[in-house]
Image 1 (cartoon, rainbow, N blue to C red):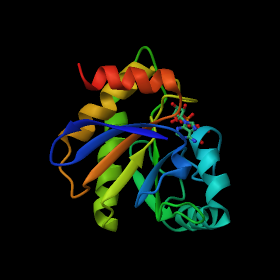
Image 2: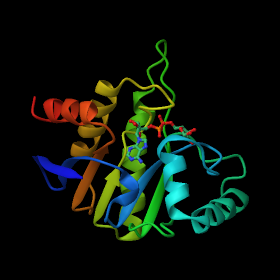
Image 3: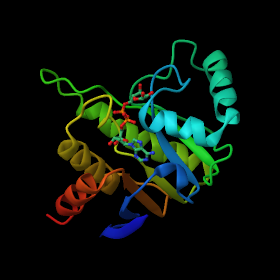
Length: 179
Ligand code: AR6
């Protein structure tokens, strides 16, 4: 895992390369889906590495708070189970659509995740590149939306790390962060 400081504001924003399930932070964010019951991509990796405790809490959340599923752009926390992170903050990104601008919803994922992190008292949070996999959001714009929203959001979180999963995306993020 590599890490480099990208910008300095009230909250430090870092870019990193690697598998977010290994991150030693207070909370990692999951690019989940409405069901909260797992899926592919980073969601599948988090549920596999975190174990049954995460799924059990997700089932309770579905039954009690989100019978129709977690809406796009919202966020909710569970235990981190067996992960190094204490909590997982699940959020649902929008699917990419050429004909409809859903960037408000993508930005909302970062804002609401930070609100949940504040409620938990988390001071270090790691984010994946929400929507940029199965949901097909172009990586360059996903990075721009992520960094600009993190920079603009008022929070008690001290460090947010954007964890990129492959070297090309990490290099792209470094270039965009410094431009
Ligand atoms: N660590 C860090 N980043 C990862 C990891 C990992 N272990 N695995 C994948 N990525 P995606 P989405 C990157 O598809 O587009 C699921 O089925 C990946 O390279 O995980 O929001 C859910 O259940 C990409 O850049 O999330 C939903 O149905 C980024 O994480 C749907 O996919 C996001 O890719 C959500 O799609």
